[in-house]
Each structure stands twice: as C-alpha cells, then as structure tokens.
Image (cartoon, rainbow, N blue to C red; front, side, top):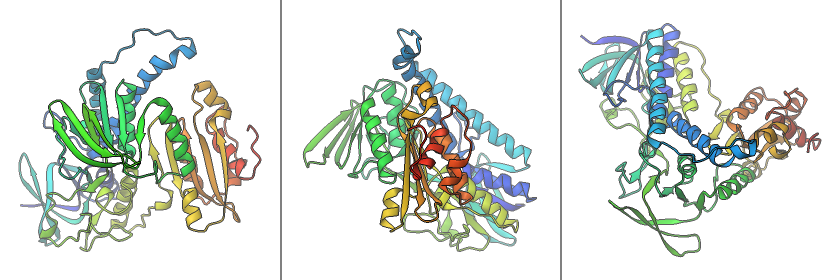
Amino acid sequence: MSKQFDVIVIGGGPGGYIAAIRAAQLGKNVACIDEWKNEKGGPAPGGTCTNVGCIPSKALLQSSEHFEHANHHFADHGISAKDIKIDVAKMIGRKDAVVKQNNDGILYLFKKNKVSFFHGRGSFVKAAEGGYEIKVAGAAEETLVGKHIIVATGSNARALPGVPFDEVNVLSNDGALRIGATPKKLAVIGSGVIGLEMGSVWRRLGADVTILEGLPTFLGAVDEQIAKEAKKAFDKQGLKIELGVKVGEIKNSKAGVSIAYTNAKGEAQTLDADKLIVSIGRVPNTIGLNAEAVGLQLGERGEIVVDDDCKTNLPGVWAVGDVVRGPMLAHKAEEEGVAVAERIAGQHGHVNFNTIPWVIYTSPEIAWVGRTEQQLKADGVKYKAGTFPFLANGRARALGDTTGMVKFLADATTDEILGVHIVGPMASELISEAVVAMEFKASAEDIARICHAHPSLSEATKEAALAVDKRTLNF
C-alpha cells in the first residue's frame, strides 16, 4: 500500500530540505526524497551545494588561504615560518569531514522536524487519487502518494560539446574538488564563480593557473568598477585570465589536456595543462524525473516552467531552485522553498529577486546586491554613486588586507539605495547590511547616519554611504 503524505519533496538540496522542514513546521505530513550517496553508499542530503559546491569549495578556499598567508604574509606580522608544506590529501580529507557534518546535520533536522526521509531517486508515476504517485528507486523500491509535490532537483554542470567530463583530466566542479595533488599546470575554461574560486584554490597551492574566458569583459554581471578592481588584484596574484578567447579542439590524454584556442587578437594558441576545469555554467536537472508521465511542462533549457509563485502547469505540483528560472544560487533556492511551503499552508510566502545577494568567495571577495552602474545607465535611471576604499579603513589596515572598496548607488531624487557593490575583505558578510537596507527601502543617508563599530570593516559601508553625498570623513 502506498504511503500517503501532504507534501513530497523530490530533492534534498538547499531548496528541497528547507522546503520540507518549513512544511513540517506548518503542520504538514512531509516526505523528502534524495539520492546523493556518500563514499559508503549512505545518504548524503544537501545536494550539489553541500556535496560538491558551496560547502566543500569554501573549505578548500579556507585551507588554501591559510597556506597562502603562512607563505607570504606571516612575516609581515613578525611570525617566522620556514619550509611550509601542504598535505593535499589531508586538506581534501578535512573538506570531506566538513561535508559529512553538513550531511549529518540535515538528517538530524529531518528527524527533529518529523520529516520522513527516503534515500533514492524520486520520479513521477502518474496522477493518483489524493495527488500524485511518486516512485522511490533506492535500495528498496517504494511508492508514495502526495497531495502536493515540490520538485527541487537542482542542476548539473554543463559540459563542452564533444568533451565529456571524465573527472580525471577534464573536471566539473565535482572533480575540481577532488584533485589529489597540486597540478603543475591547471587550465580553467570560464571565469565565473566556480572557475575563479577553484582557480584561486590551486594557484595558492602552487599551480600555474590560466583561465580562458569567451566574453570580452571580465565578470560582465558585476559592476564594472568593481570587476576592474578585482581583475587588478587577480593579475597581481598571478592568476592568468585571458578574455575574448574562442576555444577550439581539446585533446585529452594520459599526459594531460591540450586546448587549442584563438586569443582576443585572433592569434592561434595552444595551452597544455595537467588538468582542465570546465566551468561554463549549469543546466537544470530533470534527468529521471519522468516529467512526461504526468505532463509536467519543461522549457527550452530543460527547466521546469513555473509562474511567479513557483507553481507548475499541474495543480499541486511546484518547483524551486536551480531547476526553475532565476539565478542558480543556494540561498535563492532556500527562500523559494520556504515561500512554497508557506503557500501550500495558505500563507503568503514571498521572494524578492531584487534583493538576492551574490558572492564570489575569492580573495578579495566580491559581493553585490541590486543593480549595477551600467544597468542604471542602460535603464536611464538618474543616480548618485559613492565609493570608499578599504585602504582608508583602520580595521582593513590592521588585517593587512586593504584591497578593494565599497560602492553605493542611490536614486538621485529619493536617495533610495539601488545597489551596493563590494570587493575586498569579508565582502560576503558585509553585503548583508545592504540587503537589509534595501528590503526596508532605506536611503543612503539612513546608512550614513547609523553608528558603526570602530574599528570595523563595516565602517567602509557607512563611509561609502556618506560618499553618495560627497562627505566622507576618513578619505
């Protein structure tokens, strides 16, 4: 006999597990299906983010940053450290332990919130009395019936045409997180978040890293002034970034990878590397979902088509996160998961796409929320801009990390904050103040008038807000 649930969530990543927990908090009988496995074959909920994305990449970034500081910056603090070595295997082991802590934490949260967890692949079977019949293909096949179905199956790395991932030499984000030893030469195709973060990790550990980017501009989605500042920092670090390239034939052999490409000047080039990381975006994951069995509508990119409330074309079927429209960000998926759970419970869940923060966890970090200066110009919006460099911030000087700036963009008439852009230390943490301010429709003057602790990096935020009115106090 089928097990009956009010809500069945297919996928246990940030969108899925959060949706399941919120629905359970609201009194629903909830099941969550997830197929991720750990090395022992056990459940590993958390999706791409926890297993091969956000969490493990940050663990490696932290380890590699410690190594970089020990080699190049400890002496500035009077700390003598000689013959510094990196044990890559131990670093990878620590990363794996961090991932497992998060996997186990999600399983604990399911138990705490009385969410029934099923380990396996979930797929549609048919519409049934009381909702939809869902098959779980795992160690033992089970059949569930749910009144409401939330699809949160995430996304997969996009491969280059004709160049499949072997996760040995040609790597997706998954393989990039499992490199067993520092490669002498590392090639990266794509200068997006994954390319920059993974390139940064292995450059710090001694690899000669070259990033090939097809677009003529660096980080085109980022505010141009911020992107230029970041590019200067990466160039200084020795991270080689070639823009405007056209990638040609890629040869993969036991010896490594050879990439033929044409540079921005139209000159034929060849790049030989031990490993190649391909980071050219991600595609929605509907593999094995059996969407056609129930007539679930998919879009041109393979995404599940939803309206503004994440409703699909089928009554009682919803979808959130990377598998639908919008930015492929873990926190966007979480907010959609909460909103859908609340809508199912008769509440009014809401997600404001205009205040979703973006972060690139390189060094310097890059973070932003709202519109860029080039977007405001294109839209014909009259605005005021204010910037403040970390070079003039006392805490940044004490940290020994003065790269970058905070930039405010505000409406020229109302002074409402339209965008905040940061490149520099702890930008990922500093951006939250801007998100809160924009959610409450704050003006630049509001932030300029708020007392910020001294000395703190957040003072740069206050000073950038003051700069909108051309009255900075420390620069």
